[in-house]
Image 1: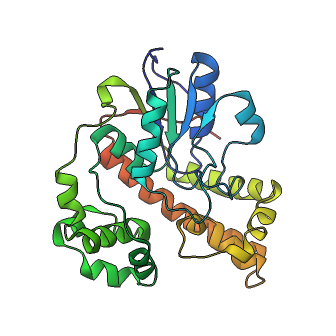
Image 2: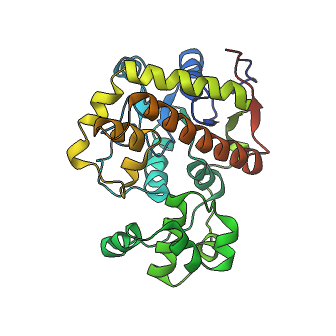
Image 3: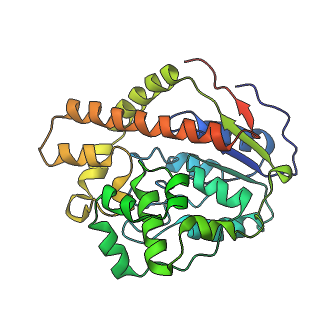
Length: 288
């Protein structure tokens, strides 16, 4: 992978779709130039998932310093606001951060700022958990509806909760956004630009590697606690593997369904990155 010059005194941001090689690139930069690898992936924060979310292995975490990986309980609330407050501490830690992940909202909050929206009460969140995507979309204000990814339940539910809890739409809150913690001019922002055919091959390869690496055991260990309403249990691949663990579908059916879900998710990521990260340094990964 051909990289631009990376100043030794600047934080590095690495964004890209799932299975695009972000973690490997972060490790390469940390080995060659130094730094602390900081997670910016919403699924990799949960303790219960390592293999199924392709979180760095124990050996990788032992080799190089990693932060904000696997530190959140499966049923604990966690939002971009939580992440932003935690990453602010990493920016003050002294070592150069290499912030890597596929959650575009985290990078947006970091480099463009994020409104201080009040926390959602648990009873309201439970009400939202019981609603369908279409029910929540129909309640949103027009400005918010036009700005969010309407196919992403987590984003829609967050917008619905904010409106119900505060009486103000998410778009209105975002209009009052404070200055960002880290402006793009003060870091080296890299986005991986990958071809869909290359990525689809990687997705199937990674799923097979996950199965060999113990993903089924990891999912089976969560069987008694599995709750599809929890964000942790909606991690890509988890619903499909859980269906197999419960005996509802074959492993091959789970493989196909999980790969389709991953491709759809990656497509949304690629579209979002190309729209919102035009000023980032675009880097193509090596051929398979």
